[in-house]
Length: 348
Ligand code: NAD
Ligand code: ZN
Ligand code: ZN
Image 1: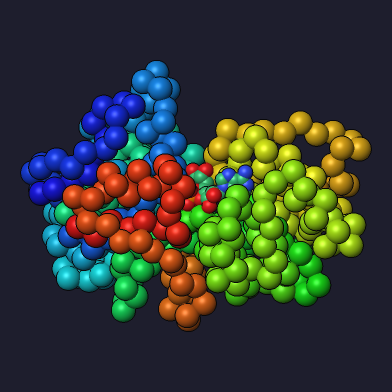
Image 2: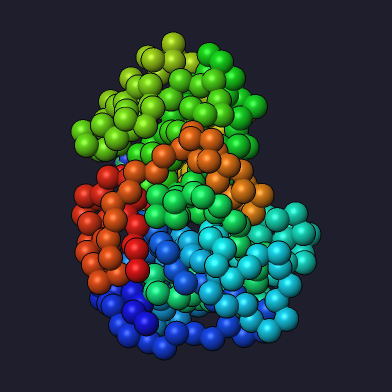
C-alpha cells in the first residue's frame, strides 16, 4: 500500500510502498477514507534530530493524527458493536484505557501513556496517511454514520481541540460577552463556528492577512482584525476598555501570547492552544485580576462524539482542500507556506 511517511529528520515526507499491516489481537484494521494535515505535523518535522529522538518519535513514521476510515478487519478477540464496513472516525489521543482519566474518556490526559509508550497515530505510531491503518482498540473509534469522512475527518483534531478549549469557557461567554480567536487556520476557523454555535459571545478573529480574515468572516466571525501591533488597542476599544471574556490563541507564538494576555478582561480565560514557541511573563498589575491561563491538549472521547453531532446538526462546516496521497508532500508545502484555506485533507 501507499503511505506518506516521515523518513529522514529535516527532509519533507515521502510517499512509499509498504505492506498492508495485519491487525494483532484486539486491534482493528481500517481502510482509510481520509487523513487531515495539522500544523503539529509541521512542528514535529521541524524538530532537530536530538529533539525528535528525545520526544520518542520513530523513523520512519506514517503521518496523520486526524483519521477516518471503514472497518476492514477485526483482530482476534475484538469485542465491539462495530462491524466490518462501518464508517468511523479515529479518536487520536490514545491512553491506557483504565487510569482515572481514561475511565472518563479523557484519554488525552492519560497518566500512564508515557510510561507504557502509548502514542497517538501519526505522532509516534503509524497514522492515517496511508491506504490502511491499525487502530489499537475499538474504543478509539466513533461511528461517522452518514457524515462525509473527507469533509469531517478534521473534526478529530481541528474540531475536537477547539471544542475542548471552548467548552471550559462557556460559563463566561453568555450574551453581551466577547471572545477573541487568534489564528483562523485549521483549528481557528472551526473554533469560530463552535463559539457561534454554543455561546452568546461576539467573536473577534485575528490573523495575519486578508485571505485568512476573509475565511474567518465567511465562517461567522463578527469582527475581523489584522494581528499586528495595533490589535490589542483595537480590541480594548471594541470591548469598551474592559477586554474580552475569553481569548483562544491558536498560534501560541512570541507575539500572540502577550497579545492574548493583554486583551483578557477581569476574570477572563486565556487558552493557549497553538504550540508556536511563545511564552509570557506576568505578575500582579501586568494582567487583569483573576485571569485564568490554560494550555490544553486535544480533547475527550465524549467531546469527539459531541463535535461530530454539531457537524451532523449542520453547525460546523470544515473548509477543506483535498489532496491525493501522491500529492501529500504538496499539502505540507502549502501548510508550511501558510497558503491553505481551512484544512488540507488527504484522500488515499
Ligand atoms: P494552521 O497553519 O492551519 O493555522 C495557523 C493560523 O495562524 C494561520 O491562519 C496563520 O496565518 C495564523 N497566524 C500565524 N501567525 C499569526 C499571528 N502572529 N497572529 C495571528 N494569526 C497568526 O495551523 P493549525 O493546524 O490550525 O494549528 C494551530 C496551532 O495549534 C499549531 O501551533 C498547532 O501545532 C497547534 N495545535 C495544538 C493542539 C493542542 O492540543 N494544543 C492541537 C492541534 C494543533
Ligand atoms: Zn493536530
Ligand atoms: Zn490512562
